[in-house]
Length: 338
Image (cartoon, rainbow, N blue to C red):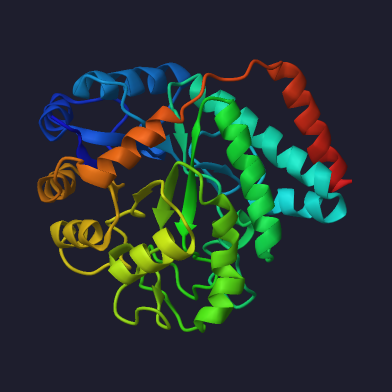
């Protein structure tokens, strides 16, 4: 039987008997880890192995390891990486150096993740912020021009894939113009479609061949005034799939975020009905995990095809000298701050 169309978090640092039983019965397509799942490298490796053992297959394990303020793996056990804006600043001085730094930083992150068994990173961010936007994106972004953001995003994606880690393109079709944080309320973007096409959407189009993507819980009122992209068939089919040309596995942003309305089951069904392939649930609350899993079917049809294609894109890591790479990257950071 096919895995269920959900990516779920789990509570705690280890897998309880209750959580294991849930995973065995629900059979989610994948998992996502957060800070509350992370202590030491040995503990994370054991948890990742237990998750896969619970479903009996090499299921994808995701994490948000961007650098800057969004970094689940932290010191002292893991290096600290700069936010996306760092690469943008280097790029502004020297385009080639900026792209090289972005690729190398992502390659090092991939090394950290792959050592733990984590094989998907929710990165790159292709959001193009504007000055009046909510700071939820802020310095996570690579810049405020679509061409620059797309170029750095491509370098980051390549660095991750060279390290055996799949990238997740986010937040499709753009969170940069939102004037609210979708963790807390529903953002509404009133810009006309021509403006969106030339800026926000334009950063995603060159990255449309990436294997995985994550939606934005944002209403684009010029296109669909009623529903955020996550639950809008118009946004998914006409914008994300057709206009942007994205044919990878499309997951929701966290279905429990306050931007969305209705019960978790209703949100999950609405997302899949709109054209999302997989529902992402992130807070590790078992009752909520059950509600989401109970509302979504096994992967089938085009969603199953995209899921298989995404996993088939996983690569064996390209060999490299980790110590030399860390020294080189440290030099890049020092030069940028000089």
